[in-house]
Image (cartoon, rainbow, N blue to C red; front, side):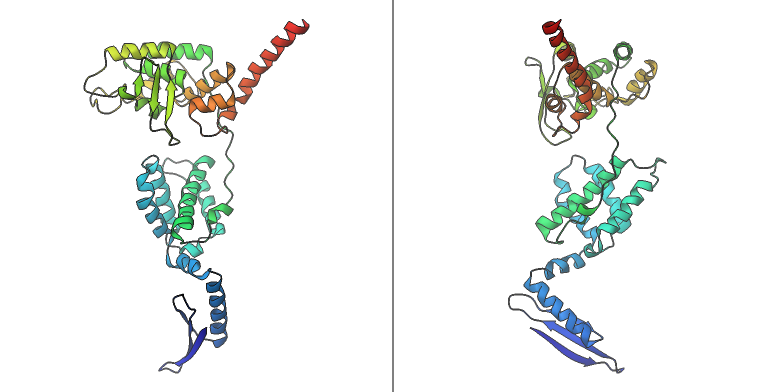
Length: 353
């Protein structure tokens, strides 16, 4: 039931104090200058309470986006150290731009406005953010909103669900041609860095990411079985990586001269508890090999491309590279199609001549 009390202030102004009392719920109150507004608010509030909508809306008005982000960072992100550094930077951007807004006012249209600002803004490096980078900013905030919906009851719905994501270009597939590979490996073998050749061979033969390679320790490498167990990967799952052939022989040789003051396969000379600085020797090797538009991560594309050209299925490529789904591995389909076409052609020639 709602009660409306008329009040007159010392200066003669009239206002109407409304109280809504429903058994089992806290009293809700509001003050209005016009009685008609007071009646409308009372009716709307009663209806919202009976339909269990009012208090969710109240929470959204009571908390700001900055409060949501801070709580998520402290209670959720703190337990997920992987990628936390990037997400903290993304959250700081959101807080700086619209952190002051109440959650009830963080609408899809507002988020779309700042999505466009992300896309058009100039970064500290002097360039614009790629669609993939913008999508990571959107994804970080979306996950925080989902937590606020499901676990905290601060908002009824995730407004990011209605925000269109920028279209990302098809992923690049830059891999080493035979002559490029031979040239690069030759340069790496001649490098003054004692680990560079082994690192590059291991990267090509296994498809491991740079961070995974640099983080390898002897306790996760089994030289007898020819495998390495990665406990921390980009997608958060453990992955066993087969190591065979030349790469395995190189690790066996490296094991004979490994440093006793470090568990790392590729430790820094000055600080053995940290991995070596790969950037300088790698960039020097790429320059000497005269490779155009080639990055270390393209060694991973090289692995996938070689697998596809040697008949590996999309599912097999995804499993070897540690992808959660087939989407990323689908970029190599055109290479496996060439292999499939050769197999079909060979079969037909044997049957029909």
